[in-house]
Image (tube, rainbow over all chains, first blue to last red; front, top):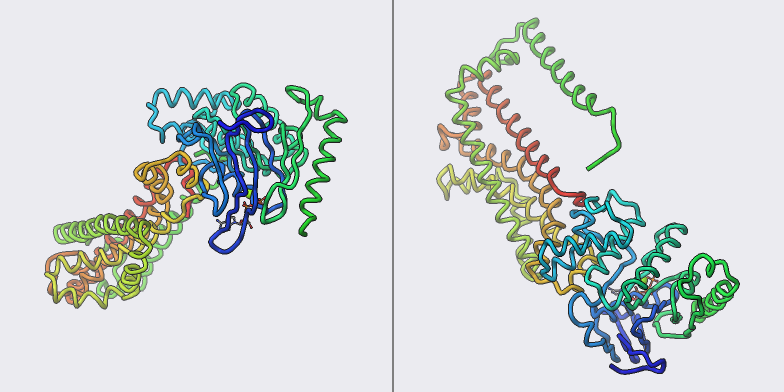
Amino acid sequence: MKQNAEGRAALVRMRDVALAWGNGVTALDGLTLDVRAGEFLAILGPSGCGKSTALRLMAGLLAPTRGQVRRDGGLTAAGRVGFVFQDPTLTPWSRALANVRLPLDLAGVARAEANERAAAMLALVGLAGFERAWPHELSGGMRMRVSIARALATHPDLLLMDEPFAALDEFTRARLNDDLLALRDQLGFTVAFVTHSSWESVYLADRIVIMSARPGRVLDEIGVTAPPGRGAAFRASPAYASQCAAVLALAAAASGAVA
Amino acid sequence: MSVPASRGAPLRLLTPLLTGFAALALWELAVRWLAIPPYILPGPVQVLQTLWSDQAILAPALGVTLWTTLEALALAVVGGVLLALLFSRSRLLSAALYPFAVVLQVTPVIAIAPLLLVWLEPGSAVLVCAFLVAFFPVLSNTAAGLQAIDPGLDELFRLYGASRWQRLVRLEAPTAAPHFLAGLRIAGGLALIGAIVAEIAAGAAGQGSGLAWRIVEAGYRLNIPRMFAALLLISVSGVLIHAGLSLLSRLLPGRGAPP
Ligand SMILES: Nc1ncnc2c1ncn2[C@@H]1O[C@H](COP(=O)(O)OP(=O)(O)OP(=O)(O)O)[C@@H](O)[C@H]1O
Ligand SMILES: [Mg+2]
């Protein structure tokens, strides 16, 4: 593993990456970005700048048109990377437990063990007792919890999240933010988290990168200073407010750069 | 599936029963009061009596028509689903063959029947006609269902390295199932119509076989009550086929997105 300036290994190294779609749209151009082992990285940027595209490159779902995406060798096996989409994308024809179990089923884990692990993960995201619920019987927040449990079912090293809470109300969103941080403390995965909210990014992340408008590349990077555990006290603190303001200003400048 | 309790259910069942009964009573009374002769319009009571007294002729005919319908439906399911799968695997094949399916679909079966009767013996010609009309809705609906795959789930299956078989069984089949069943519901009704139309086209050549032939024959003899009795059997068969196939859709787990 290559060590970066901070001395932590990079799980994903993107160097001067460009991605052009078949229709001629260049989503990314000159994107250089590391996801460091153990960190919580937030990616902020104007709509359409290529954030989702960048996550798909990290997941290995897309290959770059130019440049290099080096993924740590440990990530290439199935199940080492979890992905949470903007929508829960559950299968409507299976119950909550079977949805969480899907990655384990695809990996050929024996049914009894898979059930046990999926049930444990559902409990961990706060949905004990909902194993037999159908997706359409759950609220939006609960569905997102199922989606997170599914992404964590294989105990991945890297969790990619694409605006997972954007469709939720403010209170549900705040609760899920706290629960996500608690899960990360417990399970110790690395996160790359796309969001449109500077408040959310400061609350969650250790490090925030701000991308330019399309074609996307990294314009700025900011480290977050926060007490361990964060929580309500951090949310109410002047330190939180001032960091949010700083990120907001940078993000606004990035969006304004082209618009 | 749990839905909000509704008070409309008994009313929804009772209303058509009542209106149906009222219409029958009106029909019977009109026939009696106006002294309409049975060779013009028999009353419902006489139709039922004929159904009973002519059962030795009508029951085997019903058997023949129903068996043809079910055979045609089974062939349509196998052929339609296989071709839809083939289409979903190859754009070229789909582009090359779909026009043929459309031509067969838009050509009225009554116009094809005489040709088939020249080529085939009457029983097979009737079966092929019923198959031809039942085939298209199965094909087109299943093909549409196979294309309706959630792009997020598609990526999820790729992320976890799902095999072709796992994709087919766990993603494509459940996604297409509600569409397929909607097509099957249409195909069931059409198969019956196709069988009847072909039997009528077969005319005297199909002597002694299906219900439609009994209608034609009763027409020659001005045996109007038997015509009505045969008609009644055809309608009831159609309703039962539709109800049976609708019931199948209800057996789908969860909420398979209704097309
Ligand atoms: N499958 C695709 N085919 C063609 N163009 C695409 C495709 N997916 C995305 N794009 C284009 O690539 C650009 C970047 O898209 P992407 O979804 O990565 O942006 P984003 O930063 O995630 O936007 P948002 O914040 O709105 O989700 C956009 O201009 C989009 O139109
Ligand atoms: Mg996006």
